[in-house]
Image (tube, rainbow, N blue to C red; front, side, top):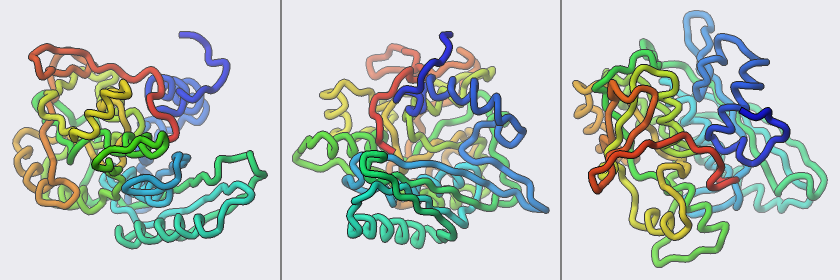
Length: 337
């Protein structure tokens, strides 16, 4: 592979260039046992507790889009990164980088959105920082959030527990967030507006975990979409994942706009979805719990873990063929989170 000379937009897209940058620079230079699993949150032993700690930055353009805004996105995204590690989110930080001249009323709308999302989720914003940079040095506003949560007792989610026969479950339609943002950005209008799925998932995930269901592992398919996350699951593992295309929920609007723009919904970011790998014995239990939750009405079993081909994600198409779902090599939709 060629040496990285310059950072490009693709290095922030969640695909193969991102993973290469992380492994060749950040993981290599920052290496420690808490970082090395490269999960959505680090799990830290503090006293008798396990604490989940995460951070993320948000640069979405435009700042407001159908179904959400950069403030809601920042809080919900951090909550979800803690929740998929089996933790109860508790506290969030708020770091703002604001361009000189940014409208105060717009800033207040973003702050109030963050406040509401955190309050509705039972999370507190407890610390923060504000920097203002010269006009042109940033694109209006960027937000960084960090979050802390306590791992639920006896919950340990890791890829090492996954085995052939386990089921892949998702709590609803894919591609809504990315298509919502790009539609707003490009001024594309349709009879029915496509809304982002941006939402905090801690209530849904906690309900599943507290049921005692045998959940092996989970992630939220944000940058790079469903395809990227499942490829991360299978990377260097002695099992693979086989998806059933007809079972993957996609709205007609997302499908139509994706076709028109040449996008594959499997690679489009989501901000209110969780992928769970569940033992076959508990799949119906988890399915029922999720479908009875407001954020899981469209939950589906979309595939399973298979013995071969190892380390690969495959898809049974609607016409009966099979294709390999590869890790994305570039950025389909920049600045969507």
